[in-house]
Amino acid sequence: MRLKSLILVVALMAIPGTGIFGETGESLRYFLNGSFYEMNRDLTKAYSYFIMAEKSAPGDEDIQLALARVTFDLGKFDEARKYAGRIAGSGRVGAKGTLILAETEYRQGNTKRAVRLLDSVKDEENIPRFEVHKFLARIYLESGDVEKARGVLESAREINPLDLYVNYRLGFIYAEADEIDNAIESFRGAVRSNPSVSSAHLALASMLHHKGLRDEAKEEFTIAVELDPDNRAAIEDLSELYYEDGDFRSGADLLGPIFERGNLDESGKINLGRFYYQLKEYDKALEVFTKLLSSTGERPAILRVISEIELGKGRLRKAEVHLKRLIDVEPENFTNYIGLLLISFGLAGEPSDPGEEPLISPAEGRAVLKEAVKRHDKSSANDNYMLGSIYRKIDDRKRALDFLLQAEKLQPGDQRILLEIASLFEDMEEYEKALERVRFLYEISPDDPSISNFYGYLLAQKGDRLGFAEELLISAIQKEPENGYFLDSLGWIKYRKGEYEKAREIFIEAVTFVEGDPIIWEHLGDTYFKLNLFTDAEEAYSRSVVIDPDKPEVQGKLQKAKKAAMNED
Image (cartoon, rainbow, N blue to C red; front, side, top):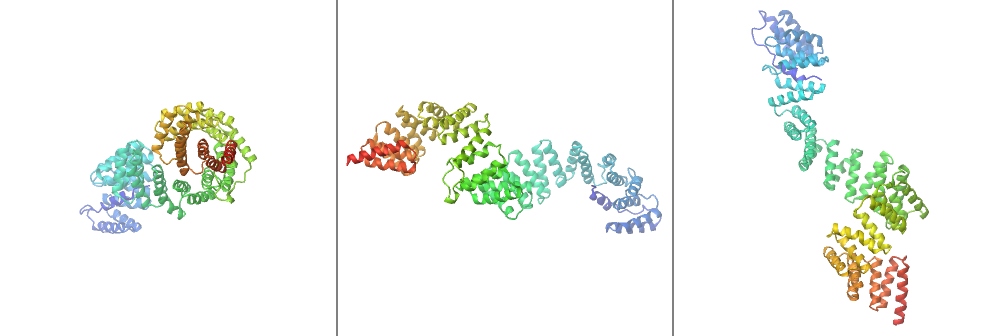
């Protein structure tokens, strides 16, 4: 790579004055003809005329310089070296001859000699000093001498502060040296010198992002993309910033049109799918991820997110298909089993329509759980927590407790683990053990209404400190006055205090917010029974049984209420 502009500037400066061609006007005529053809880039004719001029005036410096220029441009480097060497370093045009000689040496791979020649004339006043500095910096950069390149570029910037190349290269040198402020200023100079260069805006944006100036970085990334809509680096960095800032709409608006044009690469499609997913535009997310799956093959990450979307939409049969493929593709990854386990044991919610009923049998579900247990990391609190939660949900309390206590041991104080253990102990009616965990959580987060609710409800179940339990629930309800579960807890405290009429009012309010909870209807039935309103109790118990028919104790209460109602009649 040579600096063509350097030779061109030398050529423009080369028109001779008068009285320097000796005694003959013939050499001047040949020279002027050669200069005319050189300026019009007919180098072969220019060379012929300069040769004739040299024959008429042997040794003339201007003619030697002209021949050095033209032979260089014609690729006759040996001749260029000969003519430039005759005048280099001496006389009126010696510095210009030195520049051409340096270019020639550089083109022939003699980099060190080229550097020495350029360095010897870089501060001469009658040469294009700025171009020489740029050329010298280029050579230093190619040879890996960054420090010398930096010095020469900084000198070049003093001559011309707004040159794109100089500012751009200095910006990267400063960035490599972790001089971020200097890098930002250099890239700003590059942008000022030519605002239409996408790569300069991209470099500036990257430095601003590194500095933590996110808004300014986004502006520069945006300009880079506007200038070059296919600038993948700018698109990717800008979309990542949008994702980190939670600006999913802007991210989708950025990537969506590129996807529609068919110009979005693999990472861009992944980001677009993530944006649509966060925006809950699941059908669009599925379109992106499904196309990605067809082009890249069955990649686990894509199968996983497609399965998650299908689960969220209640398309359990489709989710099941993808989850089974996920396990086939990556059988050793424990997390791949969780979704299928949720479907297997009826924990994934209701299917969106009858055609989406899962096909997996209970026996298959138990086999999947067995495989998952084999593959869980015993030292992982999360793996133990997941298995404990699943075993709790399928009412295998012993296995659930083993896994959850191991999770607690591995990660003491984790809120979700402690809450799951407390819930399990509540199921087992071991209220003191449940309270032990919840008290700890309450001390850490006394303003969390959910923890206050759980704490108060457990105290009510145990029949202990009911005044304090009521205070906890009043505090929680003040924060979430329409939370039917909080109201249920308060009603249950009133029930345990024997305030049945007040409990009845609260339970009736609770079911207006959570109509489909069997426990609230059971509590209301219990309250009606205490108030000797047996027909109302029968109706409340019936509602509870319809919602959850697998509770024999509630079935027993229903029969008792029916009998009491009949006797009442």
